[in-house]
Amino acid sequence: QAQANRCPPQGFDLAMTTPPDHKPGQDLESQASETSSWSSEEDGMGPHDSDHSDRHSYDLETMSMAMSHRNPALMSTRTPRTSQASWRSAAPDKTSLGSASAAVHGAIFGAIIFVTLAPTMISYAAIVFRGERFASKLPMLTKLMFLSASVHMMVFSIFSSMPFAVGQVQDIGLIFLSKIAREVFDKATASGSTCEEALATVLIACAAATGITGIGVWLVGRLKLSMYVQLLPLPVIGGYLGYIGYFCLAAGASLATGLTIEGFGTWHQCFILDYVLLSKLGLSLGLAVLLFFISYKIKHVAALPGVLIAMPLLFFLVLRVSGVSLETARNEKWIPEPEKHPHAGWEAFQLYNGFQNIAWHVLPSQASHIILLVCFVAFGSVLDIAAIQTEQPEPLDSDGEMRMIGISNLASGLTSGVTGSYIFSMTLFMQRQKVTSKMAGIILCLGEFFLFLLPIDILQFFPGYFIGGILAFFGIDIMLDWLMHSMEMLSFREYLLVWLTFLTIVSTDLR
Image (cartoon, rainbow, N blue to C red; front, side, top):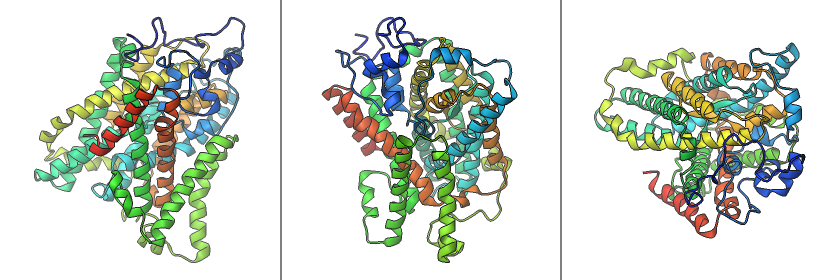
């Protein structure tokens, strides 16, 4: 019955640190190679075949490795698994930053993660605040996204038991927040609110949803309900995660081309004989393929950050060499128009319009989306913690970690932010790089907060195809995991249910 409900096998402990068939005295690496369900992290693939005779027994690490979009920071570095013995010998002093060398080492990798995450946060802002409704205010809304990421990282740096922990805005909740933002705006304007008043209502709705999610996740940890969260059926979760991938792909194509691409029936706009349009789409997809190649084939730690820095610089260099002016590039929608009067981060709170004429009556209609948001963020957080646990020498307090994630989301909501959780791939990446100082998290937190404060429209430095390519990469990667590779982990009927869930969500637009 537990297996039928997708509950972990009886006696399963989230604090488990070794594979279930581990033999005393046997090295974890050799054991992992014998048990395919524990090999997803090494081969970089998503859900795949298990050697267990019962195809319905899913280990949490495999699910979580596939659930989150295996962040490029991890995939660009194929370093060996850190052994338990070496991690014990390198265990940091949790009450201090450690030695100066450890702090410098942590700062370097904090900067690397920062370079990787900065364009990612821009793309996430474009997901939540998508379309012409929010286009004119997107630079200020992007600053709020950086503030949210900084708040998440600050909470994780303070409260996490792991000095290498990375907590950020996460994609699993962004689809619900995007839906909330669009519905609230449309309903507010339909009831007579101005665009400014409707946007203020949207910000309140998203902040409230994030805060409520934080309280819900905290209660899951406080009441020790983590095991019950896992009762959500995996094929249904897989279908939704496949939709996340499709949504990212469609959003990436929209950003690259300037078209509105949502359902399957809107893709025909891309297939017309327009050389500028096809060039934008081709560059975006080409960048996605390049990121895919780097993530899976290039081992050097600086490869991905280097490409993310070089691509915008190369674009502006080509413009300069070819004699194309910035004004021409803006007119043809290659780069966005800069704000005429750039705003510093604290000025973004002016978008709340002094809390005047808020359309409070439209907020209760979002209750169902908020309930689903709480469930999915809690589910994702449980799996993230389980994936991180597999490489720790000592058991994590899983319920304590859930409470910390809840606090992080509550703090983000109170500062007009969005939902987040552990980025387990980056957390394990930092551990494998032997980061033993919380300086890494501090650098990441300060870097994102600096971008929030900076009185410059940073969107003007990133071509649309660049941000679109990053989103397309995320989308393709997630869709391959859950709509293709999941075939090897699920029974045929369950795999069909994944596709049925995916197609249903796409056709109904998450209604």
